[in-house]
Image (cartoon, rainbow, N blue to C red; front, top):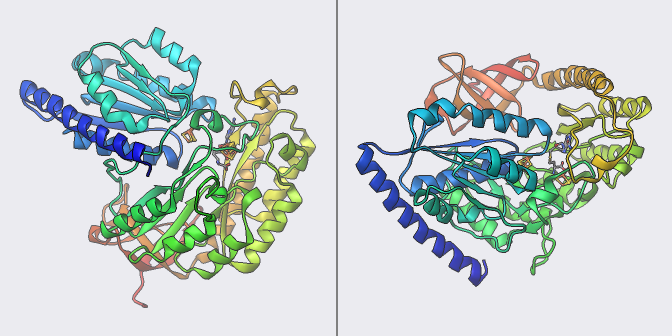
Length: 472
Ligand code: SAH
Ligand code: SF4
Ligand code: F3S
C-alpha cells in the first residue's frame, strides 16, 4: 500500500470512531441499538463491497439486519442491464411505509448505478429523501460519508470519476465464516461494446500480490477454507504492477497458504486465458475444477462487433485444450441474445457453440441497451419479439444440456463444503461440490463450514440430493 493509502485508511478509522459516537447517541435517545441493512444487487464484486459496507456499519455500532425496517438502509446498486435499474427504483419506492413509521431512517445509495450522471440527476430531483449517494471509486470513504450523513439533514452526493488509491485494511464483515471473496483487481479495460462496467468501475487496477496473499492468510487464520479470487478479467491480473506476476503465479502462491482448501476465481476472459493457467489448474488440487468462461455469442462476426478478441473457432480450441488437461472440468458461461445486428444465422451459431461445448450451466441474458456504450449507437437493434423468441430457444437448449451434464456425477462420492441449513426442509443441509454443484442432504447444522464426503444419490436438474458417505 502507498503511504497515501495508509494515511487514508487511518483517517477513515477516525471517522469510524466519530460515527460510533453518533450511533451511541442515537441509541441513548431511542433506547435501542440502531439497526442497519445492506441490500446488494449485481455481481460477486458488489457482494464483496457489501461485506466492506457491513463491516464499517458494524464497527460504527449498528446492529446488522436483513430487514429494510432499519435505521440505516443502503442499496449497493448494479447497472449492467436495464432491469437492474428498474428493480432498484422499485425497492426504493417500497421503503415508503417504513420511512413513515421511522422518520429518522437514513437511506443511502452506492455502487455502479451511481456512477451514471442521469441517475444522479433523477435522485437529486425525485428522490429527495435519499440521504447519501456515493459511487464505486470512493467506497473506502464510507465511514467519512456516513458521519457527514448522520450529522446533516441535507442530501449528500459524493461521486468520484476515477479511483486514486487502493485503500486496504478497513473492517469487513463476511457473509459466510468459512468462505470469502478476495478482490485481486478492480475495474476493466476491455470495453466490450455492449458493456457499461468499464465506465462505472473505471480502469483496470491490480492489487499488490503481497496484500492479496496477506489477506488470504488472515482469512485462513480466521477459519476461511474456500476463497474466490475476484476481478472482471482475472486472466489479465498483474498489469501495471512493479513486480512482474501473472494470474497463474498468483494462484500458485495462494494455493500454498495453509488452511485454504478450495480456490475458485471469476471471471476469466477467453482472450487472456494462458496455457500457464491451464497447467496450474491441472496440477493444483486446491483449485476447483470449474471454470466460468463467458462466450457471449457463437458468431465470430458478432464477437468482433462485441470487441471480444476471439472467434468461435479459437474459443472451441481453448475449450479443447482445457478439457484435454482437466478431463472432468465443469464449464459455465454467459450468453447474450439480441445484440445489435444479430441475424438468425448468428443466433444459430450461438446454439451450435452451446451444443458443442456442452456447458454445465449458462446464464442467458437479453441484450440490454446501455447508454454511452458503442453498441447502443449501433444500427439494426433487434426487435424485442425476435430477441425474446431466440432467448426462449436458447434457454431451453442450455437447460437440457445442463441437466444432462450435471447428472454425470450421480452415484459418485464427492467432497461437499456444507454452506447452510436447507432453506425448505428441516433436517437437511446444503453444500457445494468442487464442480460447483449444489447438494442437499440430511445433516446436522454443526457440519456447516466443513467438507464432508457425500454420495450424490439423485440428480434433479441443477442440484443433487445425497447422503453422507461412510467411505473415507
Ligand atoms: N467481466 C465479465 C462479465 C461482467 S458482466 C466478463 O467479461 O465475462 C456479466 C455478464 O453480463 C456478461 O458476461 C454479459 O453476458 C452480461 N452483460 C453485460 N452487459 C450486458 C448488456 N448490455 N446486455 C445484456 N447482458 C449484458
Ligand atoms: Fe464488461 Fe467485457 Fe469488461 Fe466483462 S470484460 S466487464 S463484459 S467490458
Ligand atoms: Fe453490476 Fe457493477 Fe457488477 S454493473 S454486474 S455490480 S460490476
